[in-house]
Length: 79
Image 1 (tube, rainbow, N blue to C red):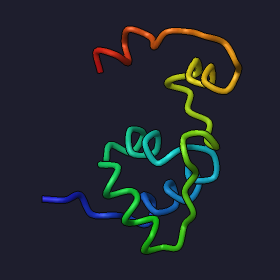
Image 2: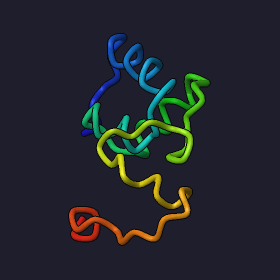
Image 3: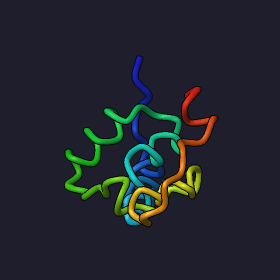
């Protein structure tokens, strides 16, 4: 059964959506990406793409735009 959205959950979604990607929000709120995206859509809350959002769990992922040639970290590959 899906977890219900409380007023506090909705407030947290609105705050997190200003800085984090839907993937990061889902992880922080212990919800599915689809659940977070659906609720944000219902509320008219815009979500950032990974490229636009701060995602502290993977700070090295910005190498794709930096011109550096790095390999994908092991913890992401095993993911």
